[in-house]
Length: 349
Image 1 (spheres, helix red, strand yellow):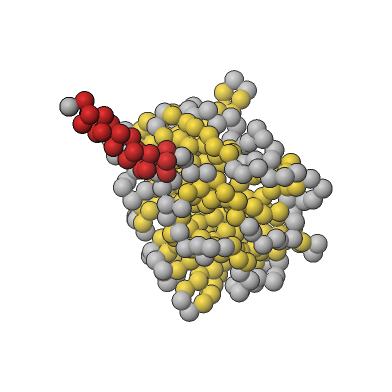
Image 2 (image 1 turned 90 degrees about the vertical axis):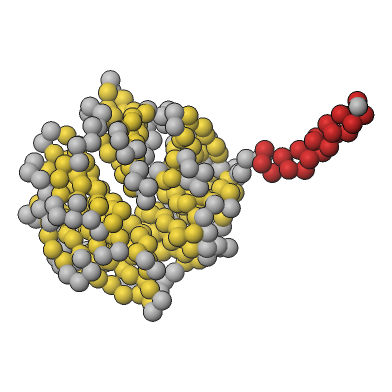
């Protein structure tokens, strides 16, 4: 009997030795080569449709002004794309959105705004109906797109229904719309500055209304994540006692829950939901030669570092995106003696 028990124990240990190493060793961040741009560069956004397609946008600070910058990830490597309208003209690229089978990118071209659309037939552009002095944000879903900004008369919320542009009014007291995101054509959210502080607005297909989100006192909003399940996550910061403290608010369909993860003074603007179900965010690293990321799962926050970069004096991931079972980051790295250029890292996959 003892012999059978010993044999069984040995069998269990042998099985554990075979299956556990891959599960026990957590995935690590690895560096992905990115073709160089004209430094210094600014990264605007990163979006991924899956493991084989991601787009990163921004602009170069060339000698004669800003130049738009677009990179595509094909599952194997980053490559620069210069086939879009205005690629060689002054301007910059902003937020990236996937709308059905198309890629939509907001573009500022020679001071005017337009939406670039890439389909199987190539690139096309949808110009804005008017010139805005500033373009704060952009959101697009099947059947609708929004651009928020200002002109000489004040705040503008421009809405495209697939065929034409209209200007949407906002509730009284709204002074400035800082950002916008959408789940569907009849469910969009925005964060705005009012006479009484920051507030969250919601579009229900008919009008913009106060979403009555109980933001922390003296709190502002950096981003809002809308998920197909109906879950909503608001990320921002609260200024109190002379310091800024990040917060997260999550709506589970019944109530809002607020937590204060230990993120220092990091903005939550680049926060995404990772493939593991946790929230991920690049943070201000305490190591100049390595990037740092926060993983927030409920009330628990853990941190991980990117690969070591020789002679780096500042490594800053600017944007994150879920790419299938992996996370992609895109940002800048400054190597001693040179200006910041592009960097990218991947976790898992």
